[in-house]
Length: 237
Image 1: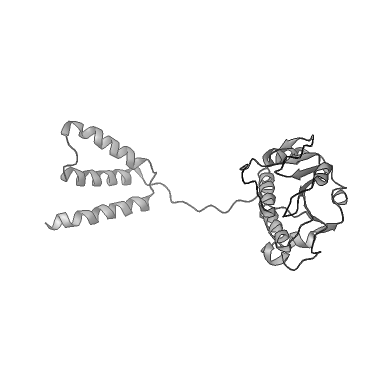
Image 2 (image 1 turned 180 degrees about the vertical axis):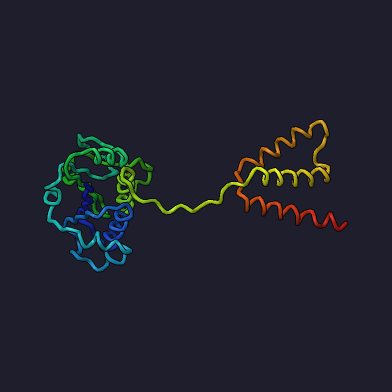
């Protein structure tokens, strides 16, 4: 079951839209709003959501935090400030693991942009979620906080990854040997393998370097073309 993302007294429609966009990036659509300052619906939310319309259309509005989480068995409050409350404090990663193992609906509270959650809001939660952050600059905007939690939650579900680009098969050993022989021939003519008693070590190192990248046939042909172009002035002399 998806967790419910609860924005408590959000101030700007743009930030609600950005939060909705962050949620849908990770397959989350359950958004609840507690007393949005500028009312709901808000015309500024749609453009900021960049296509996450399903999240905005499904969003529910409540008068209080208690009403917004009344049907939830587990409530998390996100904050970076010390509250002096005796509650478990976990990272988004640990919270996500707990959410997936929990029975019943889960809610995550996010505070208003300017000040974050009030202590009374945090008191309603059973667990505090906080991010290890620069103590001299502990400022996350609303969408950033949402995307951190949403990302950690998504790591435990099967979201489709972007399609992989098909790679060319690796070059045949004969093609790779041809490249190495080509380069060694040029280097040998240039007097690179000196002193002679170290030539076998140098050749071995060169082969090791050229066999590491797992060249494909097209890459080998390209490098052979480069070597051929380098050789041409020498052949005209």
